[in-house]
Amino acid sequence: MSGKVLLFRLPNDGRRASGRHFGRIERQEGSLMWKVYALLAAVFAALTAIFSKIGVRDIDSNLATAIRVSFILVLTWGIVLASGAVKGIRAIGSHSLLFLFLSAMATGLSWLFYFKALQLGDVSKVAPIDKLSVAITIFLSILFLGEPASAKTIIGGLVITLGSLILLL
Image 1 (tube, rainbow, N blue to C red):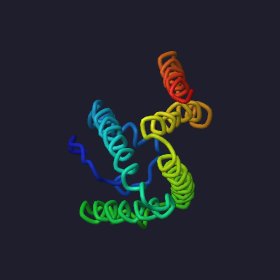
Image 2 (image 1 turned 180 degrees about the horizontal axis):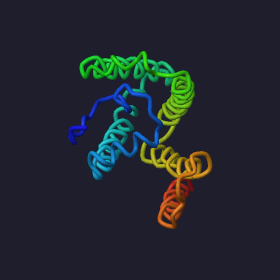
Image 3 (image 1 turned 90 degrees about the horizontal axis):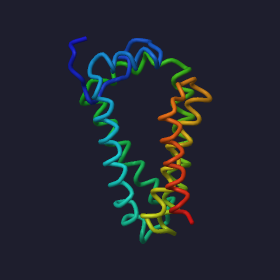
Image 4 (image 1 turned 135 degrees about the horizontal axis):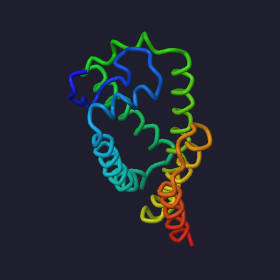
């Protein structure tokens, strides 16, 4: 490890490694970088909601989702090819492929429902409700991944849930 953090790379640099091993690598490279990436993800998710609301206005929400996915496909494969990460594709095991498939199915359904909700509702109400996924993710990560359930994590999840429910009423 050179100590520098690359924005686009395979999680395990082409080596077989568990998710926990990858987490340790990231923490070693920069204990704050995951926070930077998470903040950037939040900013782009916010922009996604605004751009999606405008983009879905005059077309079928399922068609809009399909077009969006096509653009994402071009963007992500462009990054993978430009970064050289495609070299690691043969090292991907069936276990990883299964969970990437399941993730893709969950993502696709989430986007289809999200776009339909954006088409029918106000983005200022749809987006916060969609963010209930944060609280659900916290719960599922504790239940299925055995992640620690600190008081701070539980309180944060409850506050997110409460905020979303207030906006729903």
